[in-house]
Image (cartoon, rainbow, N blue to C red; front, side):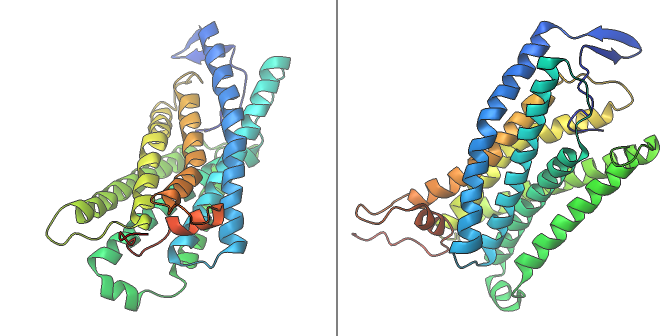
Length: 312
């Protein structure tokens, strides 16, 4: 399964052994999605680049900020791959040029999507461990757990994309359908597991915050996590579902109008929205005469201490 529709010949699509000619609505939809993505992606890349700059070079990193740094990197690479993909798609449509999307874009999209989902699930799991066993978490957690975990997640995502590319004919001319389908199945199954883990751990986090006799105080950090997870589920879940549908119908020829571009566009919105969430959470309950810089807002979005509710 090629998530970026390797071939942009979309005039005629073979479906269930018959020829199916795309309607004009299909082309209009693709053009609209392409133009919107060309607007969203550069904005998101700039916002994520700002987060990468501050967290990478201007701020002292902690366990949580390391995850956010890597999540911003995943969002940046996902937006970058989609931006170049739609540039090529528009060129192909406008000038009637048929070519295969370079493998690099496919690798970046798959690695970024899977890494972002894995990192977000890890963040949610860690916060659950922190609130359920706080003493053990603070005393027994190895110092460089965040960095090692992110490195492993990036490595596994890249390795998977390379192996799938080799078996699905993206790296070499050889194509093994059975192996390609097997890798697609592994990818879909792993994504489903991550979604379930993400939803379960986030639900536990919400229950501990709002319900029960031992409620934990609501800090900016928890607000940042909850909003980031919420945006991911709303915007990226449709893309994951469309990916699963495409895999289940791999033996057929699925048209590019089957909600694929809508899923990509929503995922791009999510990658663009994450930095905005960080800055908005940092701006909440900002004191009237307190300095307002992007660096300060980003720092405040990751505060684990309760905010002083006394008079300012």
